[in-house]
Image 1 (tube, rainbow, N blue to C red):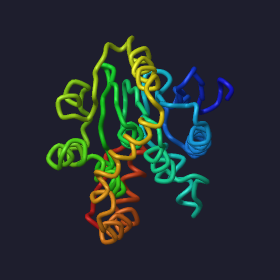
Image 2 (image 1 turned 180 degrees about the vertical axis):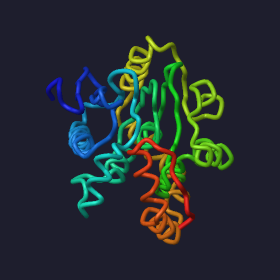
Image 3 (image 1 turned 180 degrees about the horizontal axis):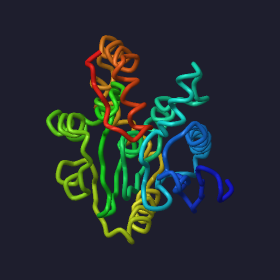
Image 4 (image 1 turned 120 degrees about the vertical axis):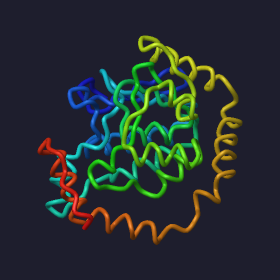
Length: 259
């Protein structure tokens, strides 16, 4: 891919590095990014010589989350992105190889979900990780809660979701949200060194180990949640759901009605 693309795909000897490349927008995730991620994940699935993947962000932030301005325009016109966020997220989670997120700066909402769905997370000391849907009257999909609870338990999940306040890398490490914290300038080096160590191991063993980890959590993954999905749809279509996005885009405090 060209350097000016929204996602860079760099091939190493036995692993790949994907770089979110909208640094001027703090790597906000829009339709073009999700399409590029989908293509990159498909290429990785098809290439058995890629044994690990690093996902990182260009510039000061890993990702500030979904581009709400573009999303609001798409939703208000009754359209949808060619690749929806849940489709891209689930494809990342289902990749058969070990995946590593290297996060720095703002790692928020959809950006944090990207990191969360990787197998391992390395954070720079300056990283701030948070889920902010409560600020704009939205609710993450069920699988996001499932993943958070599997990693950090219900109480820490509730704190992150309810407060909508980002936490520092040190705190994220203490509760198990990230696996390693490194100096800011060492982030890329440490993440790639981890990928190289992993990729040096037997590829069939790695794939079987990843499948085993997922199977151990299969009950949590498959729990019935149709009622939760309906509740989420009601929140998204509510007056508050629309007010929250408008207030964010207009840079003002939302006025909640509870409707």
